[in-house]
Length: 345
Image (tube, rainbow, N blue to C red; front, side, top):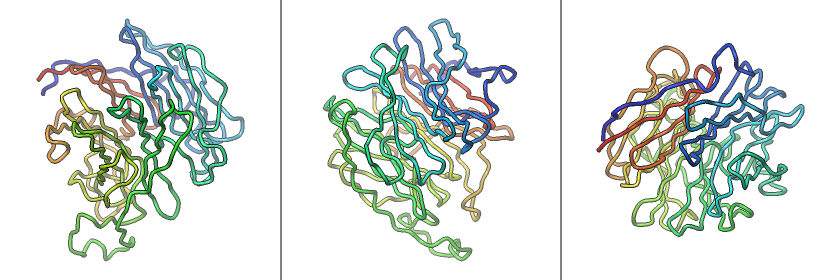
């Protein structure tokens, strides 16, 4: 697989942006080459004026000026995620809360390709665990064409990943067991301990990205506080997971995302930065695409998206067909970048 050409652009020019800060984008392919994108924006992450914004790219490559898709006056919104359900409706998930520990997940549903939306509804009424449903990355539809698997996580004193499962077009959700994780305390001596791929230093793992293999196994890669992307595998449709382990890919405690091509090739967007021994720090540059033809066992570089100084992070990536990738990510916490990448085998 190699890149033959690409289109790269900013959704909104710097001087025209409606907010000072923009972050945590998501995107969804539409018919006719159109794309729907959303992100959260305001004065800065966590601020009470942060809302979810949305823009549409038409078939000629023009973006609409961003409009507010969801807002709660006086409360911050976070991490929108777009997903097409089996009935072809579109869900826009997002988090509401002044702090991550107070998150509740809300959603909007569209039945006309994102032109109009329902009233907001709480995804799991009464949830007190910090927010159900997808936390950053898109859900996947399993091969039965019915089961939605949403990559989810909880943040607090510990970080834990799980999957949220729906079989009724996202109306109701069942929480999987959390991914088992062998933690080691965060201290300066930990770098002197013998390497063990099952040991995770620091708080743990969050913000998984999912794929299903051709045999029906489900897998996740996760952001971690251990200077590596961690992995876990499931053989029962995401209900239970094996103990998480180091995938061999470096990670600077920054968001990742992955898409699976029709031939099974995986394409991963991430910051390949090892930030030992400062586990909670590390530059969010470069930002790259790697691909794997063996189910995530080995990886090779496909494309360097950004390698200059700054902050290029929180990618969202989708496969429109077997020859086209599309992705968005944050540039310096100020703007959302969009790429359309054309491939050949």
